[in-house]
Length: 589
Image (cartoon, rainbow, N blue to C red; front, side, top):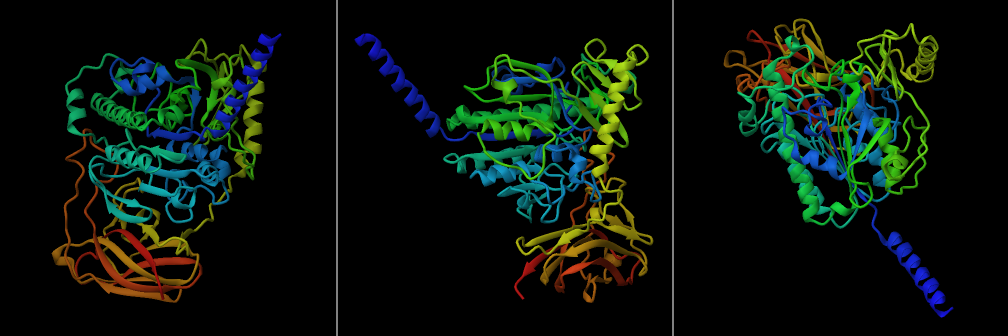
């Protein structure tokens, strides 16, 4: 009897101790590593013998691997879905540039949620969901941002970046630089919970990678090839794999730093990509690549590690989505929050921590460029309503729609229902302006990317994200932006330009409503285009220049909507200038 009482007493004390330890356990840190244009097959643990990714492979052994994880076919939609847990069209994201990449301001982000819960928050890398505040990451829940807001960048070696809105000079290869900033952030916040978002911008083109990674691949033979080798460009594949190995090295540095600070026991780390591969290369035999709603365009690796909580080596076969990550991470962190809008994703906590979880069969819809596909656990209905058994036919070679008419009809109905309930939320015309002059943020970027050229002016490349305007040859030419000044004020204006010696002297005018500012270009600045010297494969995007800042002076802007224009009222030479950016800085009046 006494022994039993001691047993009961000891059990109660143990339960109390466990309960107290749970209460006193700090909330877990969260680290999200998102890569850009890395395919499911660009990793060693998925069977690619062309590449060595020991650090990410180790994460896979020590954490959970989601075997059927899906994202959107392209960059900014996937990022929007990660941030909100809602389909990208619900948040106004329908494109990757010219304003269509912006996430609606009434959406709540995952960083908002963690910040409200007391977490320190930071993002280092490629944002791609809006540039001007309050679309800027510093307005979307992130205390600190370092990187670039465009869809791609033209130079990966010590480029011009921004830190909390202010233009700064990068330090070395961008992925190494972003990781250095992440390591510093972790060190500075090691004694409090933190939420760290690392959206790397490789292996997106231009295909630039440091020599130490490239030399391994330059003359390497490829053991695994795309199913149709005639479509594969060997040098592009090699460059992409070299960039992925650089990513792996940086992931290793990150994980080692967490372990060195004894934070790995209480940090949830995620690793995934934003879409399928950006070229035809080995991808497990799947059909499609970036931009496609077929399997190869939307299936991404996902590794999730949480030492002591997620069983090492766990395989999760259920279909899952980037939409699930917000509810999953808030659930794992124990955050009690009510979001103003219903989510499209669901918490994956039962799959991660449960032994035999009940899981209701679901469907996942993908869309891009008016192509819509539907995925269930075993089947895929493609954009042309062809049906495939994905367990038997991962390459989508055998259309079985005529043999499975009821299943085809049911999945077609799901597609139509999705169009009515989700796709219909996207307005037919994007009437959003580009905001400038927010009272809570000092800087407003007005780049060539967001402008409209009139007259002879042309863009340096069809892809606007890291482009500039050139061929400005007439006083009738001008650039315009549809903007909204959010709060009246005085703004110092910096104009970033290039101009040849023979063309100096142009007088340019910035105008918004009745407010205007003129200045004359008096200094020649004619640097060459660059980027090609670091490209491992010829790029399709614009090459870049070293643009010079010209202080135009101070302009006073009144609150309101309208067209902002930049004109050359006098051009003594053959051209006015090449134009990259206006930077407005709010100053006290």
